[in-house]
Picture 1 (cartoon, helix red, strand yellow):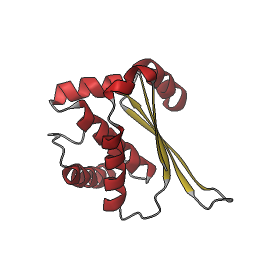
Picture 2 (cartoon, rainbow, N blue to C red):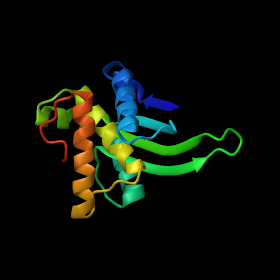
Picture 3 (cartoon, rainbow, N blue to C red):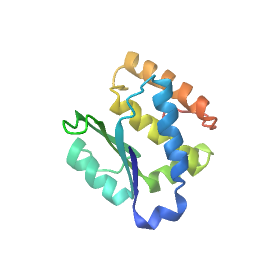
Picture 4 (tube, one colour):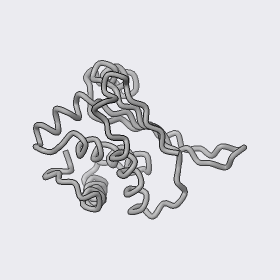
Length: 151
């Protein structure tokens, strides 16, 4: 299950189909057939700042946070990979800055967040190169136009 929760004030601006497509294409290119449960929460900068401070010790907003909760429900056998939180306001600013649509930016952030849930990281140069290459392949497969899919 891929669940998308959107703060009410942004509901009219979100195309959930775009986000679902980013989820499906990412899983396909990762060759993951488990169809893990993932929740996406789209919020504002104020709430994102609170999460970023609480979980990372950073007192500012950010575009995307991923929380890996990898477990298997013993009753259903379904896997739950984790949660992705996206700041719509930051996504909107980044889309304008990098000259692509908000929908494309949100897709990019879903891909980025999912890669983190699957254990990819960009802390070290080698990890970063692997993650950025994979991210670029997924972005290309989505046929979205992001000039710099590594910010």
